Image (cartoon, rainbow, N blue to C red):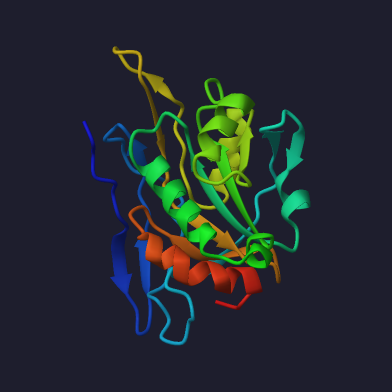
Length: 223
């Protein structure tokens, strides 16, 4: 049964900004809340981005996994100095994962070839036991053939996500054989100037928002 992803809960107002506590989105589950939420601000009036500007600029996670070609992939090393969109999810997710990645894929097709070469889209599996490199590649190819898929040690994935204020729970096999992986559904955008996350996109962000922001990310425009 399809479920509506959770959105951010407003935590309180300041003079010019709000702090929001980001909850988990459970693909196919009604899973609970998280710890160490990312802090975001109300969209700055002078920001060129339509995504949410982060109040804290997170470092890119120190994460080494396996890519879809079966080769080791060091996230920091491979994406240093590049605009990067990072999302955690799994291929058998029935709702938010394919919708999010599909919207990003459509927006990427609107970029020029030169712009596309400057943006890395990285999908990290929260269900590595089932998301083998081949499974990931097949799934990602329907959205973006140049999208980067990473799979491997779930403990490493959970630690990397936690460093960004995103909580991931161990996958659960349901009675009908389906798998539920409860995970934060935020997309984080890292700028090439400092390799830090500056912009956040919540679950349910429309494709037109990515279409507006991706050219800015490709140029490394400050948030």
